[in-house]
Amino acid sequence: MALIMRICTLLVNVLCLPLHLIEAVGLYKLYKRVFPICLYRLCISYNKKMHDKKAELFRSLSEFKRPGKQLTVLEIGCGTGANFEYYPPGCKVVCTDPNPHFQKYLKTSMAENDQLTYEKFVVASGEYMGAVEDESIDVVVCTLVLCSVNDIPQTLREVYRILRPGGAFFFLEHVVADPSTWAYFFQHVLQPAWYYFGDGCEVVRETWKYLESAGFSDLKLRHVEAPLIFIIKPHIMGFAVK
Image (tube, rainbow, N blue to C red):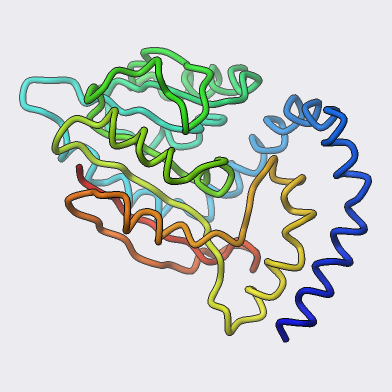
């Protein structure tokens, strides 16, 4: 089975040669202007299917509010602002994303969720958030982002840096399937094409392993099966406390 998987993956890679060339000459960056439009529509569908999971995940955000202080939430890869509706009223939100073209959709989400206070939008990758001060954030949120960052350990180091002691990192991510399943087979075979469709997204990451070794004092993580297409059905969700 492993040999067949490698052969099929090679064939898909060959079919993706035009896309590899487009990326090599720098034309793929044009897709970054189109991707926010695609993601905006996908997020509406994702939120409908994952509403219960998201509501469950973010229910405990308020527990990390300091007495007499406003809860400060920083979202890595905020995208179109699909998580805003789940944040507790009155909290302060800092948005970061490496793609500046999301700002149009962020404004729409902000207008629809005026129960929140929006501090700023920072164009930054998860690996390098130098504009955010050390130990200045109560909660960091990351959903469907660790699948596409270039360096997961570095991203988690940045999360750890900006979180105050006792703060928490909330995550909801799709991950690689169990090796004994057909989902695992097709995730690896389709990954070369999926990379371009998802703006660098990888469906074959064992993200939980990085979280387990990131040095958080407490990690609440569980594997769940999302009501989505097979390639992104396996998920992990939970939070880690600094």
